[in-house]
Image (cartoon, rainbow, N blue to C red; front, side, top):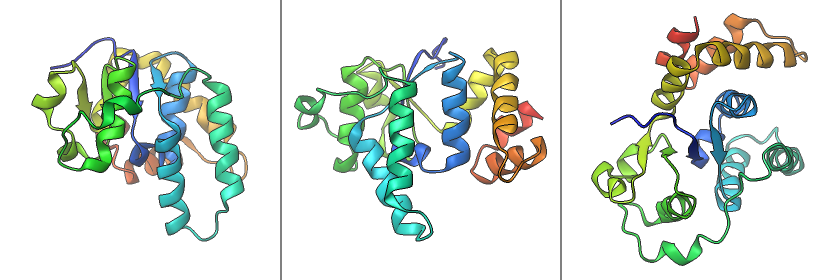
Length: 186
């Protein structure tokens, strides 16, 4: 089932972790294709995972990224969802906070690479869909082609050190698992 328009999307940590996906999703939100949502815990999770993997990045850099995200989207940070966590049942208990935040804000969709951790039938009881980021972004591109191209071009123009071509940016997105989205943007 596809929900159109996908106004409110809760972005899981694993979607914010890869910078190319995060940048494209935030640019799509910046031009008002959808409304992004996250929690401080989701932000902390992707930062923790990135710092564990990349020793060349420091915490201060990532904290500045989070501050910029929260400044650009002041309504994106979900709070007051914790009371729902203990009432939820998911295959991985550590993901209950994500669903709780989605319920609290009446999200249309949770965007995550961990589809198995969010059973479709269970989420339907909360009228929330779960989508892989490639499916979510491809849907946005299909329904907002012109805006999606503008978002891509905005990223290309912003990348100056080092500069990246359209092909470079698309390859980065493809390497992050956005094959269908890249095909639609090519």
